[in-house]
Image 1 (cartoon, helix red, strand yellow):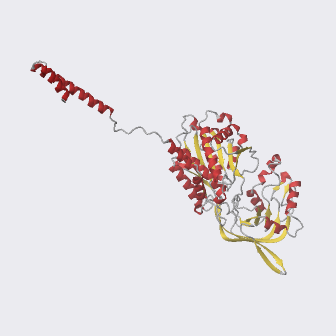
Image 2 (spheres, helix red, strand yellow):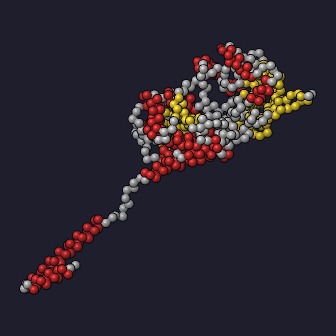
Image 3 (cartoon, one colour):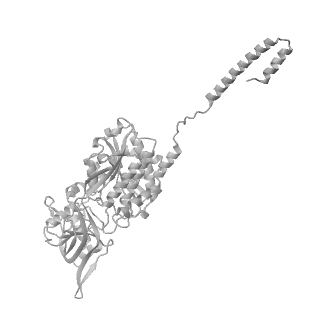
Length: 533
C-alpha cells in the first residue's frame, strides 16, 4: 500500500541530488515496511472483534424474584383454593373418583415444577386401603307424634337441623329413641351408659367425646380417651342391639364405622330438644350431672323417630397421598428431611357437596405455593424437602398412618413436620407446638420478622386429646411438628358454607412467604437439629 507521503519524501530526496538507484531501493524498503504495518493492523482488528460465541448467561434475579412472588401471591393461592373446593372434586372424600382426580392433579403440578416423585413405583402417589360411603339425595329424618288425635310428622331441615350419616347403612328405621349419654361401657371406670336401659331394636341418642375434659383433667382423660371415638360408639351400640344412632354433633362426619343396615344421622339442638321435651329433664342439666358425678343418666324418651338414608358403601376403596421431593444439595445433610404437609381431602358430598375451602383447601393451597416457589428458587436447600399432600384425615387419618408406616425419611432423619391446617379465615395466625420446639421456632419467628412481620402466636401442644390433627401422629412417633392455623373470623367447616368467599386472603400469602424463608433457613442451617431432638 503506497501512501502519498512516501512520494513526497522520495521527491525531496531526488531534488537533493541522490541517484535513481538509491531512490528506488528506499522505495522498496518503505513499501515492505508499509505492508508489515498493514498486516499488524488487520491482525489487531481481528483479535479485538467480538466473537460469535454466546456469552455466559447471568441469571435474571429480578425475574426469578417476581416468579417466586407470583407463586406465593394471594391471587395464585386463592386460585388453588377455588380449584380444590370446586364441584370438579365433589368435596374430596378419599376413595371417591373425584378425590383420586384431585390427587392426580396435585401430582401433575409437582411433576410440572420438576419435583422428584417420592411415591410408589417412581410416581408421586402412595396408595392404601380406604373404604368409603357415598350419600345420595332422598333421605330424611323425622319425628312422629300425636296432636289432636292425629299422627303428625315433623321433618327436620337438612343442614340446619340434621345431616344424613356419612357412613350410614342404606334403608330406613322407625323406632323409639333412647338417650344413652356418651354411649360408653367401661367396667374399669365403673361407668356404663347401657346398664339400666334396653336399646334392642331402637335408636340411641349419644353425645360426642367423653365426660372428662382433656385440658382440665388430662391425666383422667387419658383413661377415658379409648372411648371417645365414634368408631367405638357405633360398635358398642350395635353390640347392644340398637338399629340406629343419632349423634349430637351437627356436622358431616365420615370418621365413623360403617355397619350394614345400621342407620345414623348427625343432629343439632332442635332434634335433641325434641327428644328431651316432656320428659321432665333438660339436656343441659343431664350433661352437667354426668360430667360432675361421672355416672350415667340414660333414659327412654318414648319418642318415635325415623331415619331414612340412601347410601352406597365401597369396601374396596383406595386412598392416595401425594409425595413430591426436592433433594438436598449437601452430600450428608440431604439424608435429613423437612416435611411440609397438608391434608388435601375433605368429607365429600352428603348429599350436597361440602366444598372444604378453609378445611383444608387453604392449607393445601399454601403447600402448593411453597412447592412451586422452592422449585423456582436459585437458593437450593442442603437438606431435602418433602411436600406431602395427605389423604383420609377425615377417615381415621389413614393417609397419615400410611405415610408413617412407609416413610421417605425415617423418624431419626426427619428434622420437622410443618402441618398446614385451616389457614384461610382470620387475621390471627397461631403456631401450635411452637413452644415445644423452641430451636425450630426461632428460625420461623426470625424468618417471619425479616419478611412479612405478621404476628404469629407460638403455643404449646400437649397432644392429650384424641388425635384431631395429622401432626399428632408425627408427634407420637417422636417427630418434631409445628401446626399453623388461622383464627379470628367465622368459619364453617363440614358444611356447604365453607367456601372461598369467607377467606381473609392476605393471611394465606403472608404465611406462605414467611414459611418460604423459614424452610430455606432451616434447610441450610449448620445447627444439628437431630441431636437437639
